[in-house]
Image 1 (cartoon, rainbow, N blue to C red):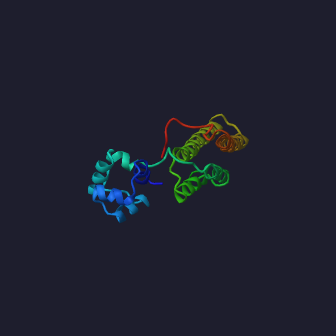
Image 2 (spheres, rainbow, N blue to C red):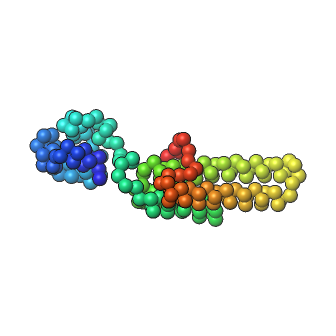
Image 3 (cartoon, helix red, strand yellow):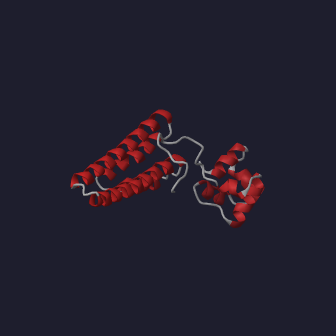
Length: 179
């Protein structure tokens, strides 16, 4: 449900009644409710007519309505392919998120956690490679660090999936978002 439709219905207005009050055509109202973002004069008139700010009319419905937790778990579990091909732990969840139009904070947080895991893994791996040469450690050290990083990422993904299933939120979450 679009933000305009949500506000219009909360005021018990039909599309025709909104047209009569605002002068914005029913077809334009239908387009906005179908997903077109209002701009310029249309945005100002609708906001004034509905008695809200323009920003309130433009806000996405991220925190309202039902979230598709099955799809959110799929987005999170798709990161597991990153254990085989590392860029996939960011790209695949992003592709699913955009394809399914899941722009809610939980989906953004899933991708942000994977971005952070990728950055940290890269830093830790490069540091271990440097230490291996500096401390004259064998190739087994680098292999062990790689395996531990992969296992840590798998653990984070599975633990977050279980938390989504149980508590409808992430177990490992950030106080910021990369997206």
